[in-house]
Amino acid sequence: MQLIDGKVVSKAVKEEIAAQVRQMISEGKKRPHLAAILVGHDGGSETYVAGKVKDCEDCGFTSTLIRFENDVTEETLLAEVEKLNKNEDVDGFIVQLPLPKQISEQKIIEAIDYRKDVDGFNPVNVGRVSLGLPAFVSATPDGILELIKRYKIETAGKHVVVIGRSNIVGKPVANLLMQKGYPGNATVTVVHSFSKDIKEQCLTADIIICALGKPGFLKADMVKDGVVVIDVGTTRVPSDKTKSGFKLMGDVAFDEVAPKCSYITPVPGGVGLMTRVSLMKNTLLAGSKAIY
Amino acid sequence: MQLIDGKVVSKAVKEEIAAQVRQMISEGKKRPHLAAILVGHDGGSETYVAGKVKDCEDCGFTSTLIRFENDVTEETLLAEVEKLNKNEDVDGFIVQLPLPKQISEQKIIEAIDYRKDVDGFNPVNVGRVSLGLPAFVSATPDGILELIKRYKIETAGKHVVVIGRSNIVGKPVANLLMQKGYPGNATVTVVHSFSKDIKEQCLTADIIICALGKPGFLKADMVKDGVVVIDVGTTRVPSDKTKSGFKLMGDVAFDEVAPKCSYITPVPGGVGLMTRVSLMKNTLLAGSKAIY
Image (cartoon, rainbow over all chains, first blue to last red; front, top):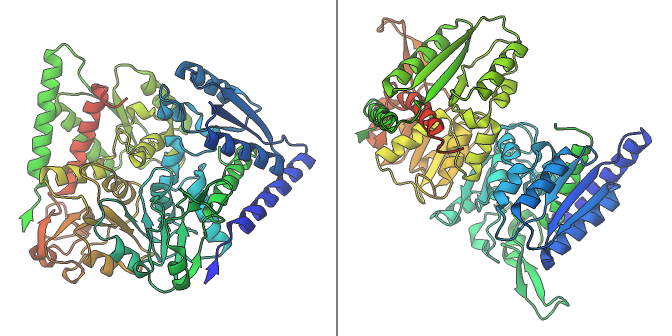
């Protein structure tokens, strides 16, 4: 069993990005610029955005943080999105979710110019991923594929079972792994809350991507020997052993599943860390106009 | 075994559309208007477009056919697309594929305003289908879902195996059947040329959608009793028994598979007929501004 180390890989990717930015600067090119809109003061969102600003520094990007209070109107937010769409110095931007109730998240997402949509949530990017065209891939599926690539895990002709059909993980990662090329060319099955055959499907899987948000869902008796397990779950559960008073739990019963695996991601220290660098990868792609 | 009759269903759908159009007209509303751009004089394309014009007549739509010769430039075609995008009288339009070599099909598809993209090929509509949002669904997957609905075939918790991962059939129909709601909530597996387990997957399938374009590919020993089989194949093979000199062959070895099925579509007379009415459904949706 080999542990897939998100810490090592995400650090390597970040260093590669920083090196590319230094190269761009030395060639007289513009420094990539990521902007983020943050509404309100939700603790989780503050932490995520602070992490993104820090990542930008590490990568050598310019970053801009634009704040609004919780009572901001949809109109004001749409106007800000329009401003960023038109701002030629901003290569890509994100609107940190969730947004307050008075604002339609879907409307905001669709207002973002797809050429600056580094979160990859705009239907244009989602559609292009499904069509196998170059696109901004959203952070979690991109992070999963990066791990698969870095560990040279074979996917062609393999049976991949994706547990969960969310718009941000299950559906896009399934669409990516069935594409032509690598990582891809896999037989892909998507199971979810309505599926009656989750265990049967998992038992035939060469690779399982677990993204349903139920701690310890995937048990040892559900997997075959030599399986690759990618755990996307990050449920916060109370804990008296950590300073914060909680710990992150994955969807996989790690201690019993790990001995049967050829590769497995830990939680924390696996996919979660990769999602942060995927945003940086997209910002570099936006800054170098590599996609649009 | 019950035969799924595309002829009966497509006729019923067309009559329902015609009734809705009469209702719209009686309410003083505008008659839905479909435009089609046809480049060159390819026999297949001429036949398809003539069929679409005829369908428009049957449904009570206005139709406009715009012709270009084979040597048309991409620029001229893009200008025509732009004109149709702006023409308020045109509710939806299609550009008949394939296009001559000097023209990028993808560029043309992406130039069509997604709100008039009744073929459902624009990335915005593809993305919205994947996200589970209202969208123009492309003709073949829409036709398959319509047949499933009309025959009240249960999909929730069922294992659907889609054979083939094309952008116009395999991938969108897989994305649709894994969505919440009906027809959906299915466990969906996509297999293709790289899959080593096609037979094993098919043997566990409650519903098989066969869309790979290999005549007679699906054999009796690959399906379980009671399976639902949707045959999307339409390969032309030479025949001395028809006036045209060819006959259409599906992907399913019908004679041996049919006895094991609860439902099966014939070829011809199944999915093919449905794709024509799906374009009419989308034109009605466009004309009544039901999606955008």
